[in-house]
Structure formats: C-alpha cells, structure tokens
Length: 154
Image 1 (cartoon, helix red, strand yellow):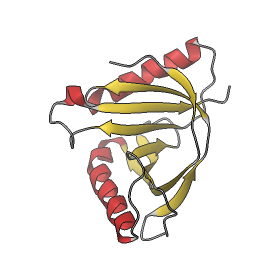
Image 2: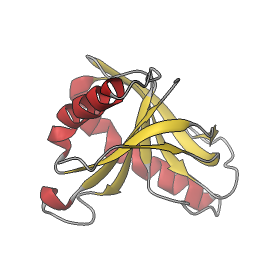
Image 3: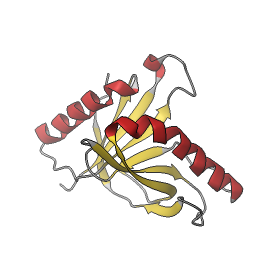
Image 4: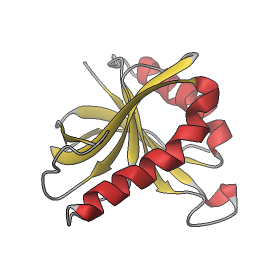
C-alpha cells in the first residue's frame, strides 16, 4: 500500500555513506553488513545518526544496484575504510510511504513513477529509499514503512 504521493522540498543534510555496485541478487547480503559498518564507524567518531538510514540509488536498479548506503549525521564524518563523508543536497522530490515487505518495493516504485509522469513531472535518474520501520522494529512485514523519494527536474 502507498500513501498519497506529495511534492516536497528537502533540506541539505550531512551524511556518512558507503558506495557499492552489486548484482541484484547480492543486495540482501551486503545491506546488513554495510549498515553495521556505517553505524560502527560513526559511533567510533562520537557521532550519532540524525535520522533513519537510507539507500541512494544513483540510477534505477536493473540487474545491478549502483547505490550508497547512507546515514544522516549531525556532524561531519571523517573518511574511514569504505565510509566517506557526504552532503545530501536540498532538492524537490516526489515522496510517498510504502507499507509492507521489501519484496513489494519494485511495484511501489512503479506506482510512484507512474504518478510522477501522470502529474506532469520529470524525474531525475536517481532515487532513494528511507527505511522508517523494518525488521528491527517488528517481525510483521505489514508494519514495515519505507519512504520512497524521487528527485524531480521539473
């Protein structure tokens, strides 16, 4: 299920990121360890997350995922291992929240993209998913919430 999409303006946000390019079938293998690496690195620097983690896909996923696992932070992060500092720019986006298991995300994205086009907007090539509630908060996938964001060029 999708909430009604909205057009919104985001604010600039400091981030800690790990960039990855992986085959589609490996996404589940790399996500958990990547998140844990980010959390451990920022904790070692005395920095706490400033919001939920997210994935920034540099292009719409195909047979490979070219993406960054990202965590918003309140202070700049020093590069360490695979972790790099980032700054998320302010931008205009189409946004909705998907309710359900991760297996339904591809269909949810299709619905959001159709809404964007139907409403006369032009999407940028990238997109991001912000994980508001997932397996760490409930064993029932019906309780999971993923915010879908697609930057707009017009």
